[in-house]
Image 1 (cartoon, rainbow, N blue to C red):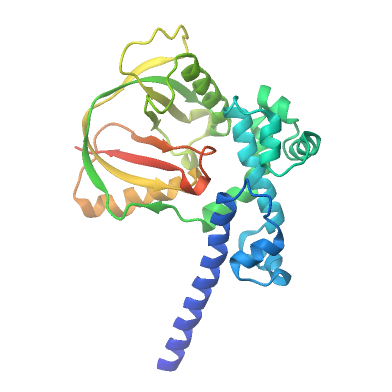
Image 2: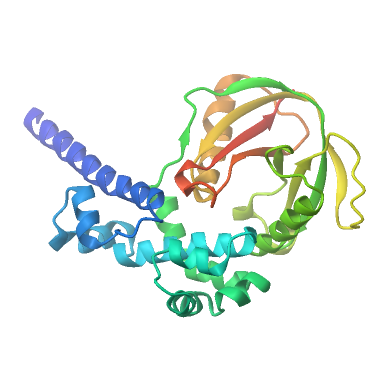
Length: 303
């Protein structure tokens, strides 16, 4: 029995090391999307796995092959830059993704999203984009664990006035609200570097009917702004004690950090919740940084 237990433990450790090595490869790909060489041979060297076997091992674990994963991950970043970073030209984005000419980039992008890069920049079809990205989303949710602080901090959050774009309805269409929010910030010269970015999370998208989903995009206001836009509202995030957990990584794994805060930390803390929704402060943004380096601070309001 003792020998059997040791063998089982050794097998479990070997499996964990195997999965960890391939999971690290996902982070490497995220960090090197602008590199020209993300070939199968190069990825095999990084993962210390034979190139003759990496394709099958990668697909068996993640449900998608490495070439397709690199292609979709690059095109996801490209889509975010097209939609949310208007200062970047289509040519710049194409070259950074390893395409020698914008025509080749346009063909690949249209095959994935059903729109050319210029069409997507002008009027994105978020439903088609969401469907195309689903294989990567599933791989990340299953295998890419978020990096968080070892310890939750309790802080006294000051009352903060914010300009708000309210998203109401299908979370899959949130990208369009984000676009309008970014455009408004640019017009009012309120970049994230001088105006903190918050999100107020009223509902869990996994347990809310799409038409009932509510989500606020907020920019800190230190003085009154004549926005001239009836869509923008002024609200206040109230002062009070909050538990803060730092989430480092993709929004795909944000739900896991939030669940840990509610299911593990809160019951052991002895704290009581205040009557205000969970909210986030966005610290570092994708696509300005690789997805695994994006930072969001999760605030849980306490009594």
